[in-house]
Length: 362
Image 1 (cartoon, rainbow, N blue to C red):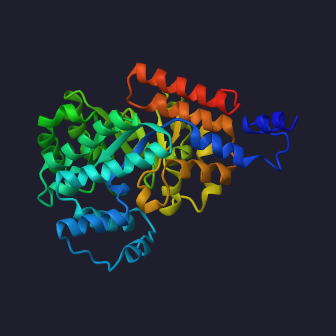
Image 2 (cartoon, helix red, strand yellow):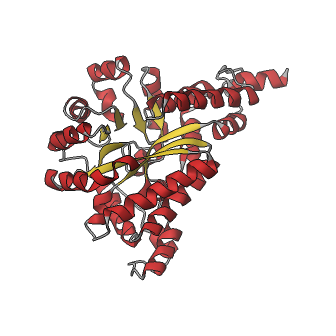
Image 3 (cartoon, rainbow, N blue to C red):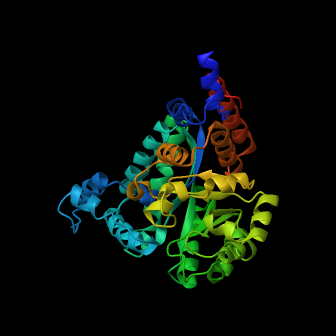
């Protein structure tokens, strides 16, 4: 009788809503296979690895220790985060550095039962410092291939243009990427959102589509719902990264729901950057109730304090979500991914197996 009650609680059927078995739910969430679709690989660069690479490459850091650097992670908005983010990236100089950074992320992703990952990378952050484009993408691609072969994680790369830079700079980056077309699957748009509308990069995204690349874009994090409209209509993206401001526009919500346009939401990042006051105020539960294809992701986990499972567990605890929402989020992540149909079917089978093992109705 007790076991039956626990399983009903895990499945989202509250036997006693005042005393849910959160520990059992958290074990299920942590074991659940999932796809990560919004991870900036430079944002996974932990302070310990920053200092290791600084020593290896003889780069002088403006911090005395790992502790001093971590203490500097006091962000008040997106721009204050980006300032230290670019400083941390200064230690990345050689192909081996990019490999080591990505491999460290994949080991954490494996521990969180991530089976598919689509990594954002910002080549302009590095090429503007004189780092060859090939060093960046070859190091990352090598880590992706090793993750597939040794960890069972299918991994792809998405090249992001920095929206605070010019259209001309974005075109230069796309030209640099052409010889490496087989190493990445899409393009994205990140960096400072406010003041840099999607329309600025309409021609660049059109050129990327001519190369057969997929398209995504950050919109509706700090920027208005109109940026989401513009990313869809002008850039013709297939996914919206963040998108939490969509609920301010009911017509937009209807479109996102009817067209099954995914949102790659990053809860702990949103709190760290003060998009919401705390996790209890986050709107991902409402996004799901509205029938949107919302997903949970870690964004820049080294800076925001949480990889995939921590984002899930803390969000579910704060919003009192259940296994039904967890399963929906996992399924959404597979649907929203750029995986093959065969891989999506395989991920779905893994999820069903996990549900059976934990006594959860899929």
